[in-house]
Amino acid sequence: MIDWQRLLDVRERRRQLALETVHADRRAAEQGDGRVAEAQAALSRSEHARVDHWQAVRTHAALDVAQLRGAADWHRVLDEQVARERASVAQAHEHAQACARVLDASREALRLAAGGVEKADRMRERARSLARRLDDARVDAAAEDVAAARWRLREP
Image 1 (cartoon, rainbow, N blue to C red):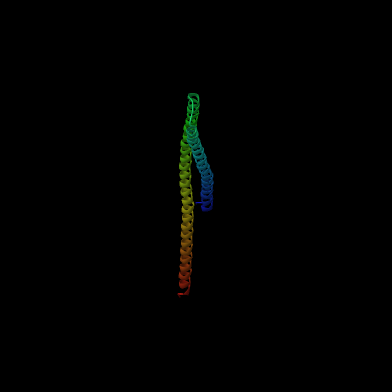
Image 2 (image 1 turned 90 degrees about the vertical axis):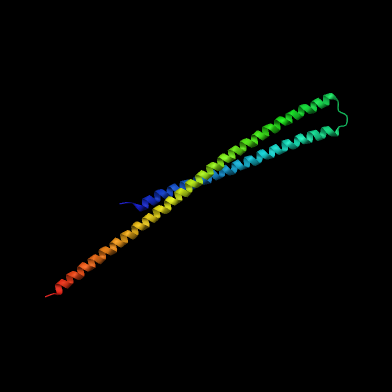
C-alpha cells in the first residue's frame, strides 16, 4: 500500500528545496543586474571624462605640439579605459543573462515540484475517497447480509 503522507512529505521537501533555489537564484540575478548598472555607470563616467578632456583641450587657444601630443596620449589612455569599461559592461550583461536563465530554470523546477505536491495530494484524496466507497460498500453488503439472515430466521 502507498504511504501517501510520506509521498506528500517527499514532494513537499522537493518543493521547498526548489523554492530555496529560486530565492538564491533571484538574489544572484539581482546582484548581476547591480553589476550591470555599476559597469554602465563606470562606462558613462569614462565616456564623459573623454569628452570633457577634449573640451578642455579646445578651450586652450594656443597649444604647442608637445601639448597636443600629451592631449592625444591622454586621449588614448581614456579610449583604452572606455574600451575596458565596454568589455566590462558586456561581461556583466552576459553574466546577468546567465543568471536570468538559471532563475528561469529554477522557477520551472519549482513549478514542477509544486505540481508534484498537488498531484500527490489529489492522488491521496482519490485513494481516501475510494477507500471510503469500499468501506461503505462493505457496510452495505454486511447490512444486506444481516437483513437476509433476519429474514431467513423469521420464515417458518
